[in-house]
Structures are given as structure tokens and as C-alpha cells.
Image (tube, rainbow, N blue to C red):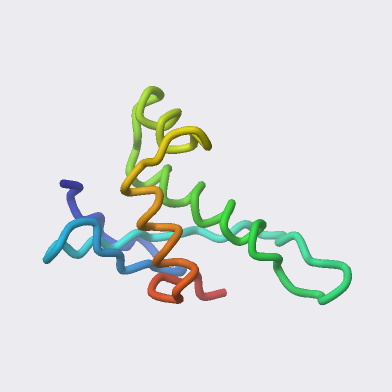
Length: 96
């Protein structure tokens, strides 16, 4: 179980359910310059997903070992899978 983190500024925020009945707020400081899709002039899904994952990992303050498991493409990690599912379903979002 992860402890809630208090928002520190007026930056974007996630409200994220890690376990049933557990609410966690993740404060995100968006980068100054965002990569744009040259064809659609908007962030591509993978670029946005990378931003979200970086912010989540920073706030969870994962150890190196846990971070490697979290990032591994060969590991089916329940938290990583849930976060990706929630993001794709629009349950969590990053407001610009």
C-alpha cells in the first residue's frame, strides 16, 4: 500500500486507485516543452504515457529493483498493468 502524497503546487494531479478503497493523489509537474506529433499537432499516446509513467515513478519513489520490475516489458506487473488500463480507459488523465 502506498501513502497519499499532498499536492505541492498548482500542477496537474492524478487521483488513482492502487487497491480497492485506497485513493492516492499524484502531483505532476509537466515539462516546459512537450513533444508534438508533427501530423496531428498533439501529443501521441506513447509520448503522453512516458510522461505519466515518469511522474508516477518519481512520486512512488521506487527503489532501483522495483523500478526495473515496473518498467520491464517481460514482467506482468499488476500495478503497471492497472495504471496502463486506467489511463487508456480515461480513468486517470494528465490535465495540461
